[in-house]
Image 1 (cartoon, helix red, strand yellow):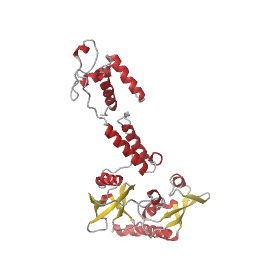
Image 2: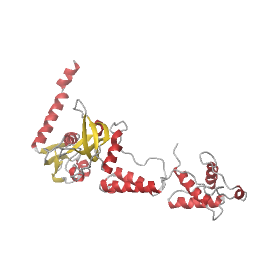
Image 3: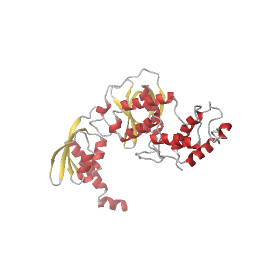
Length: 344
């Protein structure tokens, strides 16, 4: 059953009225006060019956409100003890200040997410509503994001994010898929990036110069490391600008990628380009040829393969050959001869 989020707002308004020593409130007065506040938030007004039910509910567990018995004889409402206040779920000034600072840090850290990223836009809008004490009108979801609740890397996400924000070095125990045993690494965490429903931590390893990335689902343990923090020497918005995914090695230069895309699939490439620097080289009645600078990594190859025969790699030659080799191996696996062999 959906939670009536507006009920908390109504109780908060009633709480203020019932503490007010300067006037006496009848049911009609309370109704006017509540609906006036609801209108400020563009919420629907409530009925007299709703206010009556609210007042009855407030006299029960867990609120246990007692009204002034003398005023009740004249159909007015006020707390018997005017120092009483409902213990509603609300932010203290200290909590609100902390939440506001968190929002400011997130906005600065993630390069204006209000304009660039729907997930950040939704999250910050919700947090800002809470900080501003604005009600959330509906319990029904408005937005759905890709999420894997069974993903084991979720366990360490909050700890690592807090370490990044607070600039705290950590020690992790890490075991990649190709390692037989885990190893401990002292790191300076910088950045968290999600790709293909998995999270990756980008950090500097103590004593190493380059940036490393660690899959969160391969981090077995995280501990605080009492050591001075080494801030990042790279701009991560630039770091990811010429690559897809998370894989990047020192021997992986930026190259000019040229692709021939079928007109049938080109609208997908046009509206969701491989790169911000993607440009059209030429087009005819059947294809569009596009070019862009990019580092060739496994993620790029996987994305190209996802287009099937709607994309042909023209340049660079080593990438074209790599694609051809993969296609040849796939052809062998799905050839009639291979099928006959499996069936015997």
